[in-house]
Length: 150
Image 1: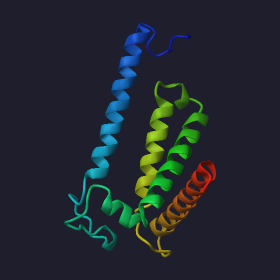
Image 2 (image 1 turned 45 degrees about the vertical axis):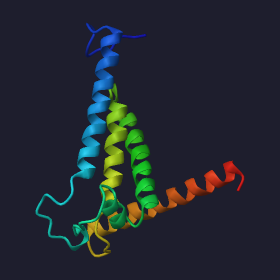
Image 3 (image 1 turned 120 degrees about the vertical axis):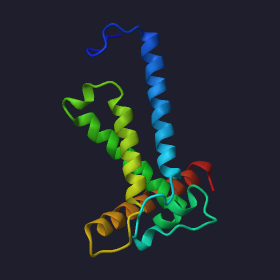
Image 4 (image 1 turned 30 degrees about the vertical axis):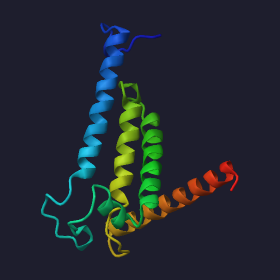
């Protein structure tokens, strides 16, 4: 294995431990962002805070369903991973593919919750993400039914 140009003094075991810690940190950061509900001063009508919502219920409601939200997150993860892998300097950094995938997933997760409107840029972007997420969810459901034979 070729040593990384950034950290040539690290042993492979130490690099694995560091990458696992970074991955765990990213997962914890992503989960804390998604469970953070209504603590800001958002005045948009789309972001109402309901008392009985669980950590993902409000997000799924704003996105138009849990399948749409999961599909938009998956499409964002694929897109983020593809974009970062093509950037000339960034793809040489350690864990850049993981960061691109997690960043894209977070972008898809947030984008699917934008307000429903065609009059603003955010609204059109939200409609695009919800449409992409819905198509991905339908494709995944059809593929699962095909594989399982039902």
